[in-house]
Image 1 (spheres, rainbow, N blue to C red):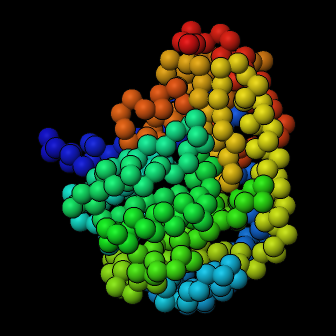
Image 2: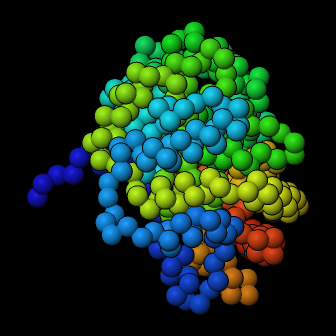
Length: 398
């Protein structure tokens, strides 16, 4: 029998989706499952985007330009310019979600065996994308005790070798909800300029910065024009994850020309996704104000409820719609599976994402979970009650 590749064998499972079979079994058994495991918002997709798909009347669904429709890229450049980010259509390649944007970036910036530094915990699929590109992840630890703030510059210096080619951040962060300050981004600027590295920023949650905090893009940091690359997506901004349209943005012309070769190899991004994405750019600002206010309300209910449970620690996120909670359990993987297989409160249970899968360092985050506050307040309150009841009877409680 032919052998599977070592790359395939080393490809990590998704901590977000690996418990799906147990959730499906629980549902078949009649349990209601509250999904806190995945960032699939229940917020309505803007009507203007849905209408654009409904109104499509062409007789043939054609390929677009490999960089995406020119009209869409012009629209995106206008969106960025309204945020004070000075880019044009030639600085943008439309991709199949933010995932493809990151794959293009990794393959453009790093060779097989090269290293990328990522503050952990980080979006779990960064591990998968890095494995796919043959890139080695060098994690730099952040801690729940200080809210997952950026480590000191000395800690980065310890990890940098001749193979280090880039630093990757998510801002605001998934899974922590941490929002980098301008001062922290300046620290990163000093590091990447000193060591001639790329600074890759996943900024898909930029609209969701709370409590008066402001999101700062790496594209606006003076002196980083040739070092900074932004990964972006429509999925979370407009609550249309299934559209699968994102983009990669950079002022580095050599980077963009090289990334274009990867874009050409896959021909074009999705037509209907681009149609919806372009239409979504017409969304009124009030949409984001309302959505942001809703997420703040959900966050506050969740964080207060979690920290009121004995033994639970959960920092208050400054952005996105995720939180990392430390639980008084022996193993969050076992606990998450137990919740689906062996526990319910009045026929209801919850599904969480074990946080160990968001770390690259072995045996780290084993008593932590990521919770996505993408459900309404009533559902979140029910989920908190279920978690509290479950922790009281879980056999592996610490």
